[in-house]
Image 1 (tube, helix red, strand yellow):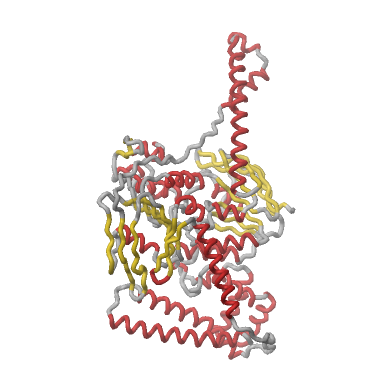
Image 2: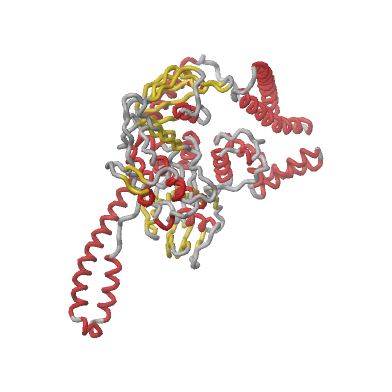
Length: 622
């Protein structure tokens, strides 16, 4: 395999903190590599250096193979908030974007000569296929409102737009920093499938272990400033890492035994030390350095008490809630039992967050009732993250909750001690919360939730911005948690390790209870879909094969070309109007007359969309 990237002696430090020093490695064509390390140890810094966004401290060398194209997905991609999604994608396609832009400008001006020149350029650059591919990629990532401004996109939509831009570059080498953050499971599985099949070289940072396991064939671990390579997937990495640590520990133990004997020798006749063999004295200090290595690494210690949980927890009877005409929950009945652990899955917008707000009392049902036990103490970890006052320090934030924290063994410790267990040492207590990294803010938020000693823990997307080591520790804590769990997560591995059964949310407010892990649920759904597909094929009437319709050989007339372009601009506008009306209908704030009027408008727009789509198909086939 050809060498796509050679890295020699690159380093990075921030103040006194050394992230890595003089690391070197080589990446060959076809390698798909995941980079693993705790938060704050230099993963993102390394990716940015390779992508040219940052630089090494003391020189070093980074060589990509000549003529290969490199694409970089940062955790946060900057967009022009005033541009539409469609325009933003086109603007980043290099030379082809200019050709497409000239064509679109000529169409808008109605300049027939300019249109002819632009069409010739589009033919030469294969611009028609580019446009089709853009729409296909955006559609696959569930981005259908092409006229929506970038500043109006949600966090998940903006992440999908950044991924679309990366995929559309047709790069030979992809560098990706946390590609699965803020994405729902369907989109993650689409990207996972794409990368499995793609003939590209890949280096990425991710905390999604199933994604990592299924996409990558090599793992790099950044450990104490050094880079270690493991061939294989995540499961093989865990085994080989344990072997490396055992070998290192054996070497350290041997060095310590030698050090003890050397120390006896070096101290044997102090007055004659100058007469000792100089090489042996130097060797002593080298040995001392090797023997002083500690394999222990600091990790979060979750040791928080859980309040006593009584027999009655949360009882739901025929709970129903709608927003306008949209039913979010339909006659849901369920009695939560002690110590049960439930995962919540379903498409975005189907009502998962609404359900959590009903359980916590932030929303009230329109029908039915929710009764909560007297001993119930809910801890709600929200997807939006921690809230704090401007300028507030880490210590001030937690002291607003309590000065001491109850631990699992029945004792109490100070909040400063508990902060230290969550990797906030004394020197960080006076840091302002707003300057903490995403991972640090998530850790602090988790602590503030657990400080209340909840016995019913609700976690909404808890895995975002947490490194794999912290996730492992959180999973162990949740497995032994002496209370109830309700978890919404896109992390399939996390769900498999922490929950006993699933609430599967579907359109119309329907909730199905599936007993088993998320992986078992996905396998079950694949079997159901295969059976339904087989039944549909068997029931379909057999017909004589029809001759394939040939595409018309004539080209569109100027008038037809204009009509097609106008339709392609009009259809997204109609879809946007439809989405706005749907949002108003589901707001729950409309009077009866307004509901009737908007419903009539919705019928008219849907009929118009159908007509325009049929005409678009007719013109597209010419």
